[in-house]
Amino acid sequence: MKNKDEIDVFEKLYSQIEGLHQEIGTLSKKSPSDAINPFKLKMINKVLIRANTILENKYKPFEDFDSFEEDDIPTNSDVTLILSQYYECMEKMRSDNINEYGYWLINGSKSDHKTARPKKLTKK
Image (cartoon, rainbow, N blue to C red; front, side, top):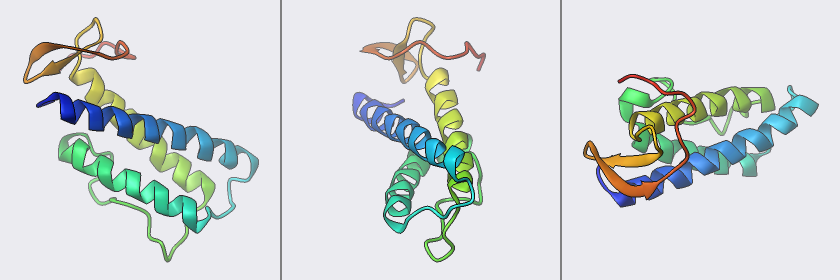
């Protein structure tokens, strides 16, 4: 991460993707083949597009996917699949940019901005 503002944006998007994944995952369990409604799709696309700018090519889950086509409405299970991939890639980015004690690294140096410890300790 480059600065605290970038961390704040990341954490907001991370929380949004986690929440959307839980919400749509619940819908997907009840009716996986149902189409997602246009309002939800619009909100999901906004979050995914912003996440793409933070994740860049290094962490973006699919290089040829940016957002869902609004003319080709996806199913609940399609959206759940994509959101889970974004969530995992964001967790990988987060894990790569924090130390083992849960402090964000800014330009490689420990900051005083704390987050949850990494889910898995990974080697860079």
